[in-house]
Image (tube, rainbow, N blue to C red; front, side):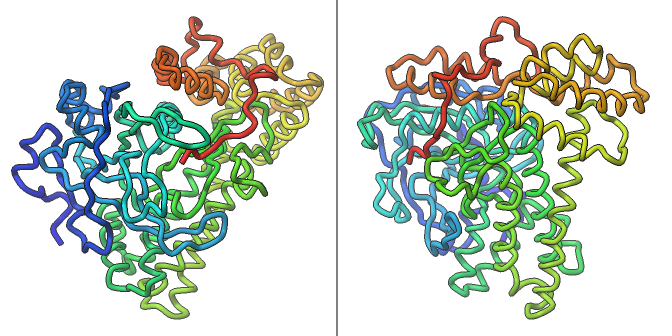
Length: 503
């Protein structure tokens, strides 16, 4: 197999999208070659200009009729090799041996201005052999949700897939009712999932399992190739990456909603924004996803869910690690045992930043946990509480805004006294502390009620609020007084209690 850095053909780079495909050179057991289904009347809704430039794609091409034809699947760009990827997965704990891209087509890969490789994928582009009876299409609502949330996550600095474009199809899709259709162009460092490895492991296909692991190491963790046991080093690296990612979710109040193994990317990015949501009032047991009836993927359960998925990933690698057998099990267990250490270190470091603590002092974790417990008992908004603490850390008069978020303000007062004692151990000035806290505690998150309002407008053909919300969320740490209402939690009648996959 050629190096990932080696170009496919000279003709690829000559096209408007500089494709340089590598996954399509793997054996055909990995995918189905497929052409996206044409749509009736494609119309561009939004192009992510900055991302396009990063990917060395001219936004003006994407906005042209020829570009819209590519983004809608009506035309295949030069150098593109469309495929639907095969994978399996545990869905809410139950193993399904064949899933795969049932409504997505990987157009190919590009190498960005920094030399990093990315997938370009159309979501909502029609049936494949993995569709399992589905129509392969996407309603506009879920497409808009993914665009908004994935780009907000990127602005928050959290590893994530990105959104390059949204196209209106000019056709309706049937769900509970007829809904306008849309296609999202998704960008990912790859679409390799825990479920991709499960697909070959379940079939006992060790040859292709090894080829997949070698490919993943070359693409994501090349340093593992230098280790005495590259596959063990690979597994340990994935465990560490996903532990850190889980911590990042917990630090911003993000709930993925459907953390199945087929939605767990081994590259360490957040992927598959279905029934996702951000917490308003902090509740560790909060669930939004309609399909998560028993709270398997509730907010506080997410680290354990990711660790469970990683254990399943480790099982797939046993034939490759340490020559297999008991030594492989021992090595894999040692790697997965490190999940908690990686998670706790990342979480505590992030929480110290959120609380304005530069030094590591014993008792910091307990101080943060006590605040969260008091927030849960007093319906305090997760995002606004930490944002208001930025001012309170600089001067005590800032306490008034934090206190107003608690149903019983004295619950905050009791904690704040111990917090200020802890702050007295810091050497930074109050203003320096405030500045750093403002850089990690966002003012703006994609509030559920705002997303739902944007989707309702979009379904009625009104898109101004969609564009406005995307622009606001691109600067989550800025005050943006003009858009202050976007920072507010929902009124009781606006609260979103359930979210849906939209498939």
